[in-house]
Length: 323
Image (tube, rainbow, N blue to C red):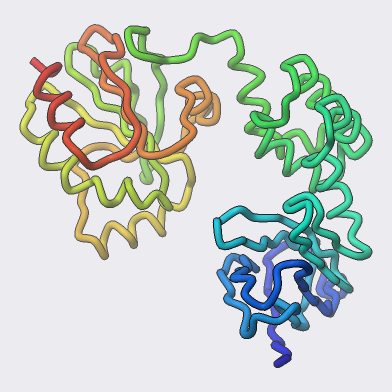
């Protein structure tokens, strides 16, 4: 097996001496030579050089635990955490995805205990045990909706985490503080918010009363968002009483602008990036995919809501509802 050697440069405020040369070997068991497995490693998709048991073998430099994934042909995946110093990973077909083993990785043991717990009560106890471990915090913040835990249990976990780690639970915090606020949906009132564009100029949804407002919740890495912008520009430009606002969930302003320039896309409406309660806004609107549109009446009522671009929904909706 050809051995690859490269270095991962990760920008953290960690002294250079804390970096460790790490030998990594990722193997599969039970899939056979026609396994068709792929890896996502350091943000890149890797096709194994052969169809043998060893999927990847390399030396690299790690500063902190690294998360990687192995994907099956059907796109189901297993995730695992490799510790600096050494990483021997075995992906088993039997019991996939929870059967993956990583020798000597405390981070992976924590990950398995919170993700693959048999019952929610065990998951809750495992979170409490590892409440300030970075992997447990990362998983809780990104996957609490699918944890099976009650609102009371989630609140207990949030309260138990050290104050210095609470900012890393921003998604969970937004969920907890908005529990008593009604979700925005068709026929409900709009939830007004204020956001800032890349220059820091503020725009408020409340300022557009008297006009129809189309809110476009989007993200820089959303392919359907980019594919749909030409049609969105063409259709919305037909209505003088219609205002559009795009609110991006991420903060990759430079990347967004670079993509827009390459695609010759210029939006003639505000594109918002920040806001004091941005996480709460996306939670109240229940944004779990992009693009996600809300059409608001001049009086502030939600006339329609839909996700995705393409097709005739946008055209027919505007033609039917914008007077």
